[in-house]
Amino acid sequence: MIILVGGGSRSGKSRYALDTARSRGSRLAFIATAQARDEEMAERVRLHRADRGPGFTTFEEPLEVASLLLRETAPKVNYDAIVVDCLTLWVSNLMFAERDLAAESRALLEAAESNRAAVILVTNEVGCGIVPENALARRFRDEAGRLNQLAAARAAEVYWMVFGVPLKVKG
Image 1 (cartoon, rainbow, N blue to C red):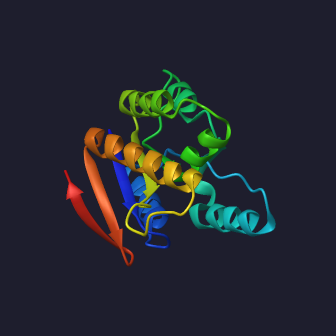
Image 2: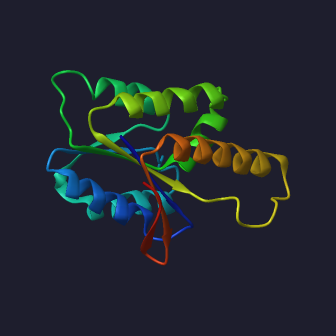
């Protein structure tokens, strides 16, 4: 089962995803797609680790999220919920690695659907602002929007976070 949690920056997406995962049981996993390439990002990663606490098995995986989801649904693995935070960072990682975004997105969603756990995907809405001034930023916005649409179509539940309040959009 896929649950999609989206919204703008600092809208409460990650907190809501963690709370939703905790409500599903005690066997929890977290897939972090961020890469701490500078001090500011390292501090963000540290704060996210502290927020989720020791109750989650954490995997730091910037690219191979689909493979990880498939591996973590093997017969001996039995999570109640897996949080993937976040899809938009994953898209940018794939873009810089020059990977096939359409194929990677399909693989991720198929792996999430086949997992026995509730897979909670966290994503940013990046299309509500102005049109970016450069081609790379426009491509990122478009790719993130495409993935968000695909994820929402396949998700059993979709939530839109506004000022820390989840609005149920689907399910």
